[in-house]
Image (cartoon, rainbow, N blue to C red; front, top):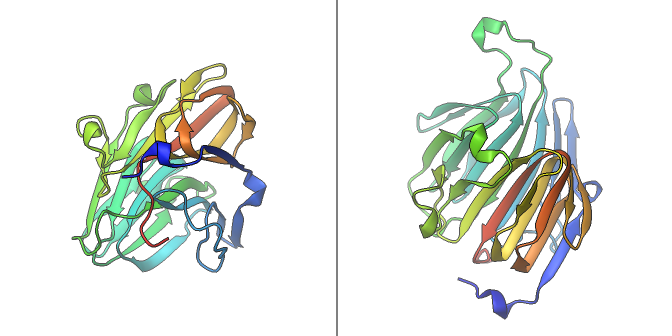
Length: 258
């Protein structure tokens, strides 16, 4: 665990336009950190968060079966729905308000595709799916692969933070899903215009605004796609200037070897 008072307080705003981008026929992906062919040694992670990908996938398309290992992968859908299938028998439909976690552990193969074909193909095939996928380092490598998903009621997200995923001990009875890192937690909130929430306090925070327009106390306006990396600070107020959705990682350690 990192002591907050051992770090220098910083509030680092990262604009949507600064992100790495991957654009192909079926995918519009924006990466907050180095990812795949995009590499910058100065931008590999913040705290325990290694990946924050903001993805839009067209209808009937998606990520074919591919491998992962030794990573806790959390997916949060904003619009549309996503089908998950993996090599250890887990299948799931992920939609707004459903938290999903995959522990890659010793190795897992999985696919993720836009769910445009369900209900016998009666759904419109023109709908994209918009989701954020986030990776955090696990406490230890070589664990057994696993999968969990759980729905969070909209009321729990409206105007306040809900604990979407956590490995922190005090969240044992409030987290929607558990992750295999005892120093990390993901919070989500949906704000109406004029609503305000306060950020948690931790050695490391990562705020991502996938949808909306907010004002961050001490830093000004944030628009969709903007992010803020906090070190040794927290507690700032965030006020919605129009309907918005926030994703905030609370982290009490930094990733090993990054």
